[in-house]
Image (cartoon, rainbow over all chains, first blue to last red):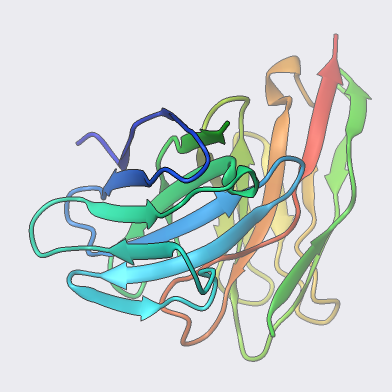
Length: 113
Length: 113
């Protein structure tokens, strides 16, 4: 029971490239949440997904960012044409249905050069 | 919308000192309240939670009581250790939010020997 797995742990991209962050929820968890943590700031909600459905994307930037949670495989947070301001730690969390208690992964640190 | 406000850090204490980190919230209905801890370079770990008014959450010597009359959930520990040095986040999960957490900005705690 490995908990929430995120990879890669560190990701370096040049401006204009694409970044793909992966998250495998804890076994038995069907809800996935993505958060972004900017330096010296708290965690900001980005998106909440269930299998094959986006439930709440109120925190997602309108452009360049997308997320999916397919029927099979991990959830993916995709950032197209990255800019320096996208540099941050991105955390994934999962939960069972109806529970407010989230289990977090160790995060992906994205650095944009 | 729902929000969480924490006391600003950093908080620096000597070992065995008493700790209080203030947290207040704004929410409609009856949210669940949480404290998460983030050690350097790691993801967030649930420290304690309370789901209804007057509940007291406790873990590892930390306590927090859900006070609806003052909309507060202050974190306390009677005697801190160097190993408690971390960033502490207060969070709420509101009604009908699908488990989404709203975080405060975090409070960094540094405990000196």
